[in-house]
Image 1 (cartoon, rainbow, N blue to C red):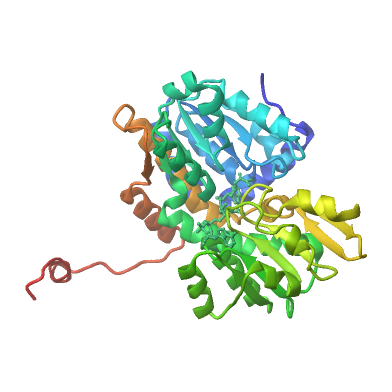
Image 2: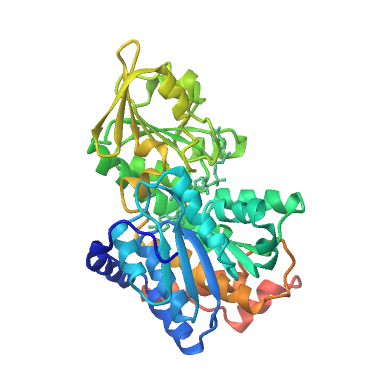
Amino acid sequence: MASKIKHPELADRGRLQIEWAEKHMPVVAKFIRERFAAEKPLNGIRVGAVLHVTKETAALVRTLVAGGAVVRLAASNPLSTQDDVAAALASEEGIEVCAWRGMSEDEYFDCIRWIASWEPNIVIDDGGDLHATLHKEYLDIAARVWGGTEETTTGVIRLRAMEREGVLKYPAIAVNDAKTKMMFDNRYGTGQSAIDGILRATNILLAGKRVVVAGYGWVGRGIAIRARGMGARVIVTEVDPIKALEAVMDGFEVMPMKEAAKIGDVFITATGNKKVIRREHFEVMKDGAILANAGHFNVEIWVPDLEELAVSKRQVRPYVTEYTLADGRKIYLLAEGRLVNLVAAEGHPSEVMDMSFANQALSVEYLVKSRGKLEPKVYNVPREIDEEVARLKLKAMGIEIDKLTEEQKQYLESWKL
Ligand code: NAD
Ligand code: SAH
């Protein structure tokens, strides 16, 4: 099958979007791409990628192709595809795309199977559905995959579970866990884009609102600080005592969801867990409460409970569903409980994806170079790659830093002062 997209007529608009992203992604679209184009480290390699089909992903895919790869790309979320970008990419040499906004769950997995059955040499995933499908349905193909990467926290958790159970068939690099990914993409990327998604969907005033953030990991921290920056009164819920303490000392109110549910105006989940907001919470929420998910798939806010409690529902704005409960209270769910930043807005800004996708491009190159030398385990992004990404980003920003003198180096390495 060649590309499967919905709006080929949008290709020109998509090209403009990609041009805009690339202008803000110098590490991926300039530094790494120029080297890849000269050295062709991925010559003839089949790369199967399941990522959000956005203008930033387009910049990564073009860089892989510049390095000699042939790429098949499928959506990593049924609602996040930018159809104009999908159309632009599908018109390019060496790239096939299976993605459109609003695909069904079955169509979403069909596109993932379309990648798996292609026998990719290298796989890139975001959330772990490609890795899981390869290991559940295409085990013989999985055994021939040279290596894989994983873009997000939840996908890494799933890969580590596969490693623990001894079923992982290829070496996998936890791109999410690179410092130049997690500390920036998860924190500042989601911090900004989740708020962006909520505001685009609702246009509410955040100042003075009680915003409840579930989970105080990298994503939760980013959202909490940005919401506070907009004047919201932020409450954090956690299950980890150390993270909870950190939130308290960062100046946030911390309480169980059962309590927060009664007083929150806006709820944002960022835990990677399921059923974080469920029946017992919907039952006590205020009239008008707004719910958004910035964490993982559509399971953090347990929509089946809301559907059961509701006597009616209607779409009141794009990406805003109003649920009316038996006592007349109305609860508003954004983006069907899927990632609000990628559904109701455009995902993370290009500048931050520049670092995440620089790690992806360099990790793919590393896997190709290390073919046959790595065990089927989960590896961290090599430190040299992480530091190289930071160096290149600083260079692109025109920022110089100090260097250790010889004397300082020796001082730091010795115990005899
Ligand atoms: P993390 O592991 O750093 O943080 C998750 C936090 O949630 C942890 O502190 C954990 O203790 C807490 N938690 C777990 N269950 C909870 C519960 N029931 N109630 C309250 N807190 C709970 O992970 P992260 O990097 O912050 O990522 C969180 C999720 O966001 C993951 O699913 C990740 O894949 C996703 N993510 C989304 C985006 C995006 O663009 N929207 C970007 C990056 C990561
Ligand atoms: N695929 C799953 C898993 C979470 S996606 C889901 O849809 O629920 C979270 C990942 O999306 C982050 O790790 C981040 O790197 C990526 N992301 C955020 N903004 C993006 C953008 N503009 N383009 C491509 N990927 C993006």
